[in-house]
Length: 107
Image (cartoon, rainbow, N blue to C red; front, side, top):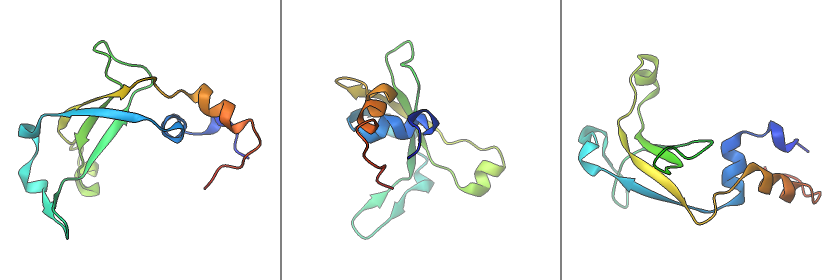
């Protein structure tokens, strides 16, 4: 079994579950990055979670994803918005307590 402290913080936060409410400024989306899929038009984005809320209470930010080639060139995706946990913010301590019951990690 992996020790809870050795797990990535994001995995600790997400394994407990919860709702992360997002606020996006759609005018900042690079429209050339939109692509058509079988069921709609999509945009790849990432949520970057923070260890602690910022001065405005945001727990993370949403950035437009960039290709691996663009990342190698130092290009960063546009910040599209922020996110806040709805209700209680999941913590690593909560996950550690859940793991102490002897269950194996499900991956």
